[in-house]
Amino acid sequence: MPGVEDGIPYKAEDLERFAYELFIRCGVTENDAKLTANSLIVANLRGVDTHGVTRVLVPYVRRLQAGVTSPHTNIRTVRETMSTALIDGGNSIGQVVAAQAMKIAIEKARQTGCAWVGAQHSNHFGTAAYYAMMALEHDYIGVVMTNGIASVAPSGGLAPMLSTNPLAFAVPAGNQPPVVVDMATTVVARGRIMLYAKQGLPIPEGWALDERGRPTTDAHAALRGTLLPMGGYKGYGLSLIVDILAGVMTGSLFGTHFHGPLAEDFTNPMDVGHVFAVLNPGCFVPLDEFKRRMDQALRELRDCPPAEGSHGVLIPGDIERTETERRARAGIPLPAPLIQEFEDLAVELGVPFPEPLSH
Image (cartoon, rainbow, N blue to C red; front, side, top):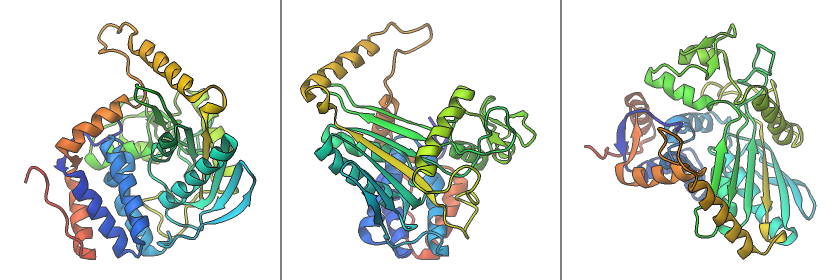
């Protein structure tokens, strides 16, 4: 799991309230602040600390303070058909843009069976699964893609030219839990390497190369170098497709045209692009039949005999559900350096920082 390896636990509700208050202090409206804070805490609860308050809360606040991200929602529809739409995020908060785009896609899918919605001039939106899972409430399939700053070299190249370009899928089932896949097209997300660097930990071999294209276990050298795509050239191809759909097709930045990293550039808008797709499986077979078949497929996977040393087959989403239940009880761990950053931010903006669970 791309999470914090160790830290002091805090209640999820307390951290969500803290993030909400920080956004309010930055001029964000109540509803947008609630949405953004909730998306970050859901990521933390699921164990995806790379996209929770653990990594992005401080840069989000700093970008809002610097005026690089607009605290106000400035979304407009650029073009539209019965089953497609392109919206301009107007440099609004990425979570707000993404949620609005997914709502549009869901409504269009209700009318047409399938819909695609692109978003341009947006910002980092947290974890892609958050929006893909919105489709589950309607028994629809959700697909989400986004691009970002280049950190991956194309196969055969040395310089970073593509992002980790994550994509997520959420598929409903009947009695079985839904299938939720959320992954970068690299071996790991860049944010996980950043968390390792913050914690002073080495990274495993096979995650990244240094600036000269050599394998490295130094997190800082990896951040100066390039991440490795999953599956070699296959991951590169998948990353390229995501960049084409989310960047080239939506009129957003793509490839090497982005500016600095989220946590370092407080001058330029991100201008990332997103794509959201929603499919009603009931357009192919009756919904009840689809759910029965999904349950059958998932049960058969779970019944697969475990390999030696394995605890059995897991379905995508199982680990995150288990971690959500555990962290709801045990709390969300924060490393000591991050706690200090939060405490400094709390003093600066006059927002009380919560006490830890172990206090």
